[in-house]
Length: 458
Image 1 (cartoon, rainbow, N blue to C red):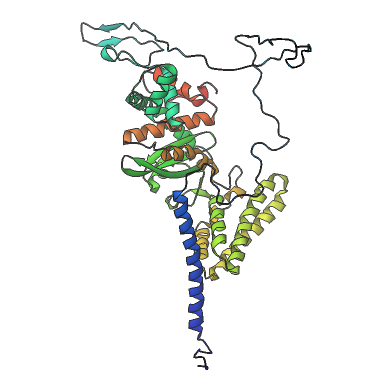
Image 2: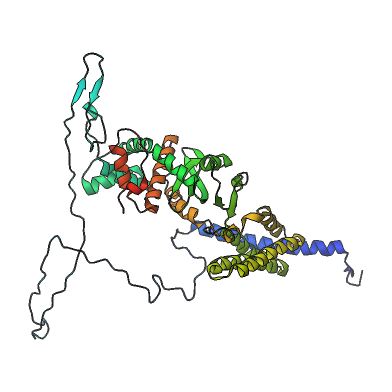
């Protein structure tokens, strides 16, 4: 002890504890600031384009300068022509006369729609011997109901309702109000609930056919998000490629993916969700998710060692994606050499980072090591993407629907959602009319598989 009562030489344990206390105080300050920001954000109005920091020189919205202009094509013909003459061929200010030039202007609009009511005089016969009842059916009919239920809605109306519900996320009440306001057709929301049940049941063979086509593809992207069925917490799953998208509403265990994928033997592109780990498939893990995780750690781990390690791993992923972009213009031997160096650098990072004293950095290392063969499959197999962006784009409408309160009240409704949302997304991917699909399903007396390519183009 010196004259001031302070200890001159501290033991190593005290120095270690002081360093730990200092680090914990720094973390506490960061977390306190984030908590206060989160509490303030909860009291603000929501914004579609929310920004935490204002950009000093933001990019101008819209297309880049020099881009090809986009304008509506000139129509082949006009249904009516209206002359719009000047009141006078003289200047209203000074009275001087001037020459007049006529410029065409086109306007495309929807005329007021009047519903068309069709009366089908249906013949029904009963056999006097066996009592068998035989009823005729016209190809344009969508229902065999007679008597009190003899007034039904047509296929175009049902198709529009299905599109508004399963592509725009509108509630059945809003769909009913839309038809009443614009087409003067009074319907109850429950009418569309029951009709979409029937359409979904007829679409089952088409869904089975699409699932078999998806299983025969070379790659499948998968993703999932939260969902509600009544009071039960569930998950909305998506499985897709460039041409087919299939949804499912179920729990969040690996059995859902296993049942959907069946005998699929291609590459499964996913994020880091653990349910896919038990599937014995070749996988491509999303680089975007782990890069976002690295960026988050870079903002929280301030020590130089962690920053250096995280910068190295971030650069490795960027190098891999740059190598993919340059692949077509590289000789095979040079490409293989660069790929070998990339893989070696990745393994060197995994080896060196085990000495880190940061628990979060060690968890990142454990995650990367656990899925070591699944990060760069896109560098070995053409056609793969380094991210799971396709599945995220396809599931995004479901996320918006959930935020609008458009989940399901019953499991029957969940079945209808996964079937019709799958058909709507697949038709959109292939440039086909979803309404044409609904018309085919309603005109068919028995459920049959419909080929998407046979539908009218958008």
